[in-house]
Length: 130
Length: 139
Image (cartoon, rainbow over all chains, first blue to last red; front, side, top):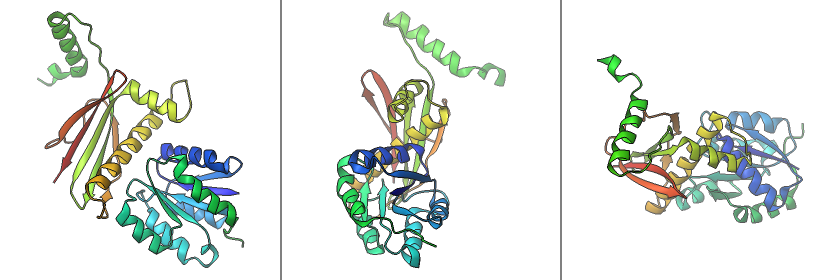
């Protein structure tokens, strides 16, 4: 299982990865991107089972990335989980309407990730296949 | 006149030590800071500035990366920026849970020259015996 973590902060990517490992994804392969453009390039390579993305990033932000993933025929089923400091109740509602699988607030904790990890494990990979 | 301002940081540290060691008879130590400044864009306008002693920031970063040896300076700055970003998010959520808010990208640096702190309210915080500062401006 391959997980893509998208955040412009190396520290945030490390936190998220640790939380995911503690939450049951110790065996997963992790790949990282610093913004939405880099993430889209990696998604085109295929095999990604879930994306965890920040919102506020230089270049393509997380909201645009979510929109692009949701509008791509090859990625419609790919779970996109938002992990952001700007993910409050008001924003969460909007992001869920846009197709986010979940919205998690920074600082991330393993407990926050448990339910999401269960959901991903049940789904399997749904990235680009061609 | 400009020549007189050379090495101002070292001269300030010496002035602080020279004053306080004679006034309160206690040793004084200091050092450089690492800071991160984050613009608050909406719905309120303002900024949050986090300034941490370099050694404390290195300890934080070493803890995150599980590294006992010295961590690279860019990781220390990145860690401080992420902390500032997270604090700003928590604060804005508690102030306005019903509003969508927007933060800028953090600006980070080392040393004593901060971006403008005009109009900021400052508070100090402590972790063990290490003091750090947060400046906040909201309009």
